[in-house]
Length: 101
Image (cartoon, rainbow, N blue to C red; front, top):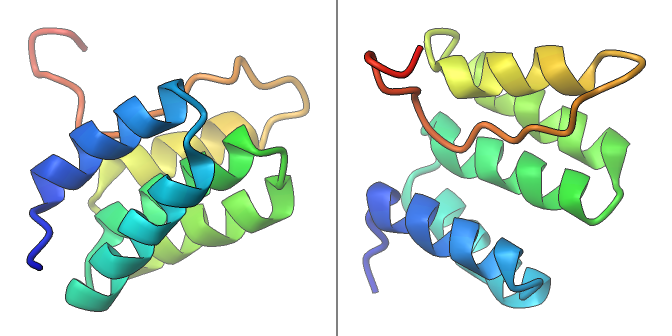
């Protein structure tokens, strides 16, 4: 089963909103296997871990995403946001729209 990265973003966002964390984690792990050099699955795994209260695990995945692709802004934005003492808990799943910035 091929997992498209745009589908991964949409599906994981929906699963996390409905607290289907285990199902979401399985989907993300499959994407990590299919795309081992891509930052997107690691960024989303970081969001999942942060949603479940595992801050250290989340930061590891945000850093892994950033290391895989330093130009992928969502991982950097999540690193900066959740690295603060008082985070606003805003998750960045995908690149912001150019108009929305």
